[in-house]
Amino acid sequence: MIKALTFDLFGTVLDLEKSTKGSIKNIINNNNSKITPEEFWAFLRHRQRIEQYQDNILDLGHSGYLKTVKNGFKYTARKFNMEPSDLELSLWDENWQNLIPFSEVSDALNSLSNKYKLIALSNGEDKFLRHLAQKRIKFNFDNIISVEEVGAFKPHSGVYRKTSLITGYELSEIMMVSANSFDTLGAKSCGMKAVYVNRYELPYEECHEMLKPDLIVKNFTELSNKLTKEEDSYAHRN
Image (cartoon, rainbow, N blue to C red):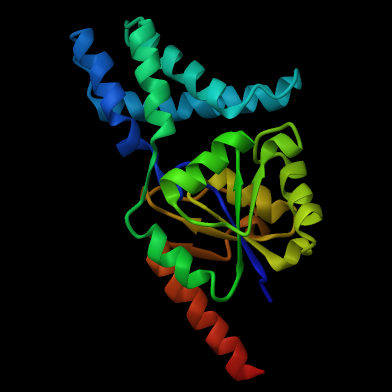
């Protein structure tokens, strides 16, 4: 039986592309670039993950999520022949403090909270996550766990194992909910259950059968509906 759901925030609960489009358009317009905001964002998202992976692999100390976000922004701008000004970097930082949740998130979280403990498990810094939960998502999670507890970004196995120790739940009693496939892979490899929220219509990773998600959904509404049906079915059988 699943007792707790852990939620990735960036790209799963929070709509990063929509939230940061203003600052991306700003730097493109200021530099008269021909690139579209969508092209800029797609490259930036991949670059940010490289920043995080390098942070883990080099093992030189955890640099923090917001730093990797800014490094990714700078790198992407330069890749497209733009040099971000101090004002453009300031707008970028401001956008990240005002991230917007996906429209269906609030109702789904409230529904799921009737059956599970709901935990934010994110690559962000603790103070930043608490700001987002309170001011932007506006939901009172049962716990908020930052990767700062381990000093490494997901999918480092220590993040998921530490979550089990912090919450008191066995790994098998926790289900990771994420729109990032690296996150569900990391959770499954440690013995958690996992839901892949395929918000971006991407193919899942090529991986061992045991590392595939237990459930694939399009959004949080489908997540809530499917988990409710599974719980009802389990209760009926027992």
